[in-house]
Image 1 (cartoon, rainbow, N blue to C red):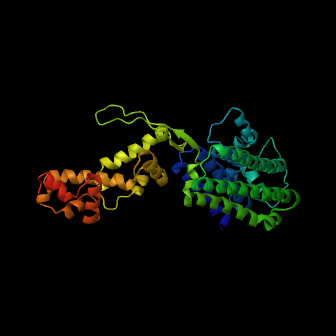
Image 2 (image 1 turned 30 degrees about the vertical axis):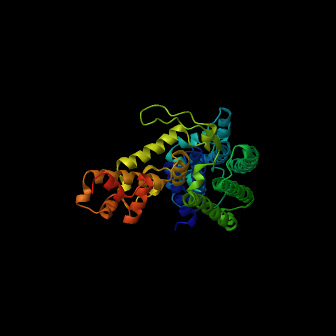
Image 3 (image 1 turned 60 degrees about the vertical axis):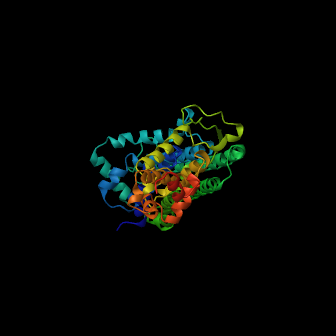
Length: 404
């Protein structure tokens, strides 16, 4: 019978891959986050296989290089936290030293990886047995089983301290660069939860390593540590679920950056007068010219496809179509486009109504019918939007143009 630990691990790995493929935060830091959560779930899946699985072939597959991936979890978690707080996800040459233990552990598994299948099955039989101290139980040629476990405990303990230190060090530096908005509070609280959970993992892993070294059998170890294993695997699953329920976490911190808008063109093609200092707008740093162009392209696509004619057309439609976060679009309309979404949508609808009226639609339809064709929910909202855009009611406009 499969244990709950197995299901937690598989679900966590799936959600981590989902995060990697569908993150909408435009932050490469999310790749580090996805990797840290994926390899954490893989680590606990490996433990599940070693403790509960009775299939020698499955154990033999997991015993080779998979355990060494544990040493990727902590560096990836550190790079994620640092990238979010510094708004820079690039790695220097020195940063690759963080992967040194992974390289050592991975290299130590090479002899086993290229050994015969019979040899792998023999080690799998030792893993399946109830003893921790069988001399042939040797997955890594460079590190003994106990050395491997002790190094893992020290490894995560050091990185927990490093993560908390990074969090507080950059927090002091953010005072002059950050916009203290709801988004800031979300990211701050998330990083506290993220660092806190890894602290719990370090604490329980150290206890687990002590029990592995001191207890004489696998059965005694499971008696003492099964709930810890289940709790930690469930915790990593919950971290993934939090990201699904609060996707704003993926958007990063709202760094302040002064960006001067691109000079607009007048209708005759001339460049408009230069903007004054008052026209400059401090906006989050992820609104780069390329990102603004991407948003404008998505809006233009919605306009070209005449989505505004749909009575139910809302900003969520553009967000779902383009993958651009909803609050990014709202900020764009109000602070860069200089109009609300409803104003933009109603302007397009009124332009379409003028086209219909000019083409003679009033001969077949009433103003209420034209309003419905243009996406308005009622004649009243059509008249109100028409007057706001044209300065007069539809009836007044048509009389002036001699259309009625």
